[in-house]
Image (cartoon, rainbow, N blue to C red):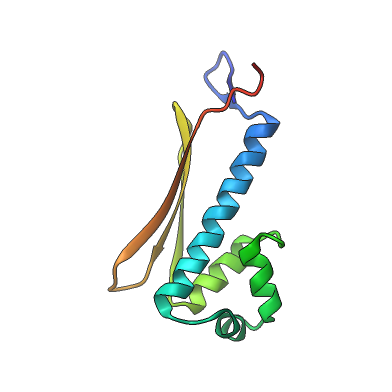
Length: 120
């Protein structure tokens, strides 16, 4: 990541790849946590989502490009709602996905990664 003279941030290709992979890992962990908290298995998640069990396995293993729609559907059938929060980088960048269910506890997964200087 580099800063331009105007103070805007220019992401380097390696930073973007790491950002994508971290976001995917957070999404997968969020779905798995929802499955665990609701005590359902992958087959039941697939039935509720209207897809195959192998599709659920692929999204949880990273063999599928998980979309926001699929993430929202997976969480929704577990009785959860998705909330996204993105922050501008300071000395580190972060992506936070909060998982909540009405009238129940709220849990979140937060990934903080240091700035990467891949140009050095």
